[in-house]
Image (cartoon, rainbow, N blue to C red):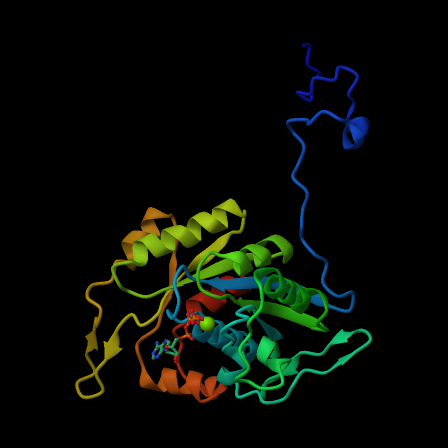
Length: 283
Ligand SMILES: Nc1ncnc2c1ncn2[C@@H]1O[C@H](COP(=O)(O)OP(=O)(O)OP(=O)(O)O)[C@@H](O)[C@H]1O
Ligand SMILES: [Mg+2]
């Protein structure tokens, strides 16, 4: 069969007719599933915080990043996409529930003015478990993007659930994420875990801003020396392998655990994420 310039078997096919054409043209773009945010919102940059594994410190890094950017004078926001294990209200000691009107849902503001939305801000009791099917969970994350009155936001950080499952897929498909930060810890598994996150980002066409190694070392308060509790870190090799940069290293620090678990994250002291913050400013 003779083919036209668009690679379609229909020799009468023109660019104009392609939308209704019964032949599948080889150069047709897949349909975008990106959802528009609320018309009252002006969100400049959206950054996803991901890892291939649970418990490595995504929520801690998300919170510290939002606090860092807010301290620099930007308007930061956090969308807590971890529906079954939300951590953000606890890290910021947010007890208040979200309220809504006919235009949308208002984010819950932290003491320093960071806008947040989390499933715990809409559940009656913090301890109520979310026992929902995947599509309902994914729908909730989408609504946090479409129905929340975020207003003007310079940097929105999305705290992802662990892994590369349903919710990260929904976030990458329906929210215009400008880049992701991959959080890792220095155990042996790191190479495989980072590879999974990198491959997912590539598959979804999302730029990777860089890597953050959490629990990287421990500084002994008695002698001031740094100890690599989990053995030598392989983060530099892993980063090189994927052509990525390591933009931050966080120590194991009981003060960080307390800040995160006791709702005092806005009081943290430390400049571990400065390099990453500078990178975000140049985006
Ligand atoms: N650098 C650190 N020093 C001390 N404690 C830490 C550090 N990083 C994280 N933690 C503690 O480890 C726990 C897990 O951290 P966090 O909730 O940020 O991980 P996560 O990757 O978001 O977990 P999940 O996959 O369950 O969402 C928290 O209780 C936190 O306080
Ligand atoms: Mg978390």
